[in-house]
Length: 302
Image 1 (cartoon, rainbow, N blue to C red):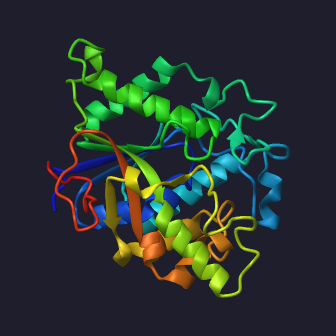
Image 2 (tube, rainbow, N blue to C red):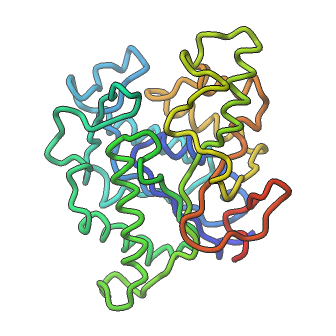
């Protein structure tokens, strides 16, 4: 219950944080733990779900990034998070965009902006995060897996930057002008539980919904972003903060339809669909676990 325990999250675009760890962020912020979010781009290349805002698109007025900056501010208010930064400052790196591969995962777009995050020099970008790590001194860091969840180039780059920066920040002789070295004790990759996803799909199909998540069989292959339960290390029960997470998602209105099939799962299988968020441990030792073999807190054992 103290900001002596500090969590740092590294995400690619505004809205990624609320989708992946919004409930955890709200829970820890409410409990008085330090929560810092670093967003690597402003999401300039995102699709726009609001027709009257389509003029903001990259191929039109190209003002979506500034708009999403405001959406992120409102989302952080909903989650109670007061420390948010853009990596290197707003506009330092541009959203790289993406396209869908025929196998169902994201890949880099055919045309990428010169200032795209995907093209960023790894050491340069990591150094910007090293400064933040040494300032904030987080015990726990959360980012994506090596595939970025579903292959988005910015997610993959955020993973690379976060993992490299965590190493560099701990080196006593590295960039002393950035401050005293700091070792992040525990690193996690955000994950989605396979059993929970199958449970949700099964509930939708049993309710007669055959169009949501079209093509996904509750008993068949699932997308890349779904993680087998045996690989999970932590499950944070933040069901008391589902409303805060949904409010944060609603703040990202150009990108997220909270009444769409993906998030409507919460209405079909209960608040635990999005109130319990899962993680794979990458560095550090798994702390005390519950009956399901998972840590119930990212700070467990510290």
